[in-house]
Length: 372
Image 1: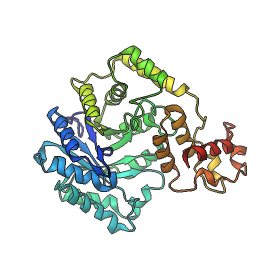
Image 2 (image 1 turned 90 degrees about the vertical axis):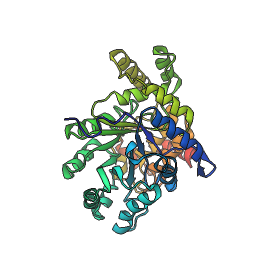
Image 3 (image 1 turned 135 degrees about the vertical axis):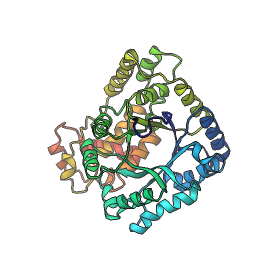
Image 4 (image 1 turned 90 degrees about the horizontal axis):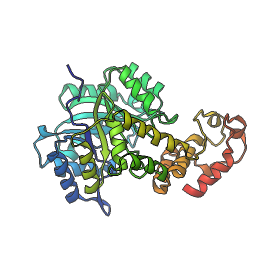
């Protein structure tokens, strides 16, 4: 007997970064992307209540649900109880809204969105764990799981507390595989330990691994001049066992076509390929960055409650990948629940306890210049 999702093709269409025409989704191009995706034999679509302010769910209703038989694809969406919902009823109503926007009738895969850190408690307080099981019993939801952004030990705690969860969605890519902050490998290993099939998100790290730093590109192009850098990242992710699918957030036809080429007659990484990717990872790792290990000693006594490791994560994204827009997005996410780097009063408490002896105050000043 196979595992849940074993027969689903291993490229999934992530609907977070759809092509846009001004403030609206480009429905014409989205329809063409949906057509190419399905015609190539792929069937998994992933959206969320909050993607593009709800426009993603509306768009996939137009481009997919209204145009294809419901049984010919799998549609996933997510419930973010920690965002915008002021009480349990508002959180539960998100499912009703998602069903109305998409017109799908039911969701094949339904996810509690972005568990970890301080966000998990909202699902506990609002009774969402029981609610989704009730909806599953009614046939509104076929399979229920969650997406996750936190440490492996936190993932294990959730899986121990909620064995009824059928699958997990994790950020996995070769850049984050050994990351102390993301812990891709460690989280994947926890999911395997508990026999939960995995959906992979961010396999190309939000597009950063499609155009990695020049030294990394040289490693990949030397091994295969014809292969795109994105294809190496996707093959790394899709070569892991126990997957439901690998989501790629495609925002145009060229990205769709490149991904379809990668997965046409898909070949997992062999031994030589794995060595190339490991060389690329180590090359990326060697690019100078703030040597923060996310021990969080600096945070415990910060009078301004600045998420210093989060600020450094964004700063390192900028220094390694050179993508200011992406790094600013990271910075906004990391400082969303507390003060920004500009709140620093230069008291020096953080520097007095930093095991890596980082010049934190100066690094925060640089972050202010770059991101605020």
